Length: 371
Image 1 (cartoon, rainbow, N blue to C red):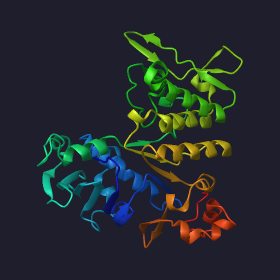
Image 2 (cartoon, rainbow, N blue to C red):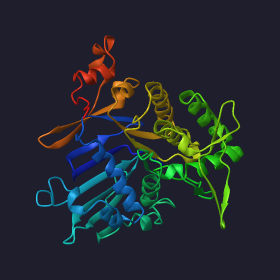
Image 3 (cartoon, rainbow, N blue to C red):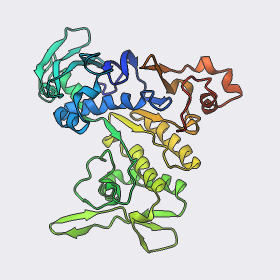
Image 4 (tube, rainbow, N blue to C red):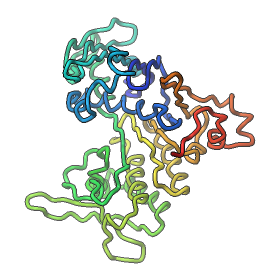
């Protein structure tokens, strides 16, 4: 069964008043000015992950209150509705807000192909998907909930913006924390150490190192030497320069360098570890133009293995993609509008201009903002 998200509908969520049966491909590049709604689209995936993890209340508290998620506020919009299609499986739910500004799930339903919708929960503070995944289907051992749960629980919204001196990616992490790359790359050293030492993943590790060398020419390899901290063994992102045996530390890496290391690791991780959908918000931040070219190649290659959704403000990054890879996000009458470009519509323009240039010139409506 497919874990790819084929289409989604959203109503009443933040700046998205209504988005009906919007189709997603394996590669989706979201562009648009500041405040257009790109980040709100990606926030939908964070919300779903929180629901699958039965952490909707914690997610709400971390973001202030549920009231801020409703289009123009809960007085203007009383309910948030979402509907997702994964091949033959479908899942939908309806959210409202309580008196103490928490979310309540009014309805949660699923169905298979052309069958009837089946309730899996009503009037609940947390999602029932975790329980629904264990239910059997009519003709199969695994029901709809299993496939929906497997897809959503595998989504990862990577966010590598924090590259400060105290950023988690620069600090020690226990060696055992290596099964999946965390969304902020807090366990990147343990993750890479596992790839380096595991025969099955060795080729993936070498490919990551190879691409890092393209962008950071003086980089030779990671050292990743574990140290004992009491009863725990920990590791951090130590590395070696070409022509030197001196162990370089994470603080020797520039912000752009360590961010690219995180991006390369996320996009080149082994297929067996890949999320069903990878989402990255503005991956181009702090990167050299050549690094952006390499990044674009990695994004394209990864989209052949799994679904990728990228939000960007970079015309240079957009230059490396085809029009039908790109979704333009604009605001009309206060609501976010999403429209996928068409190769045929822009073919004559692309004889003289690049896609990024058309965006800068506002031929593609939704000009980038340089605030």
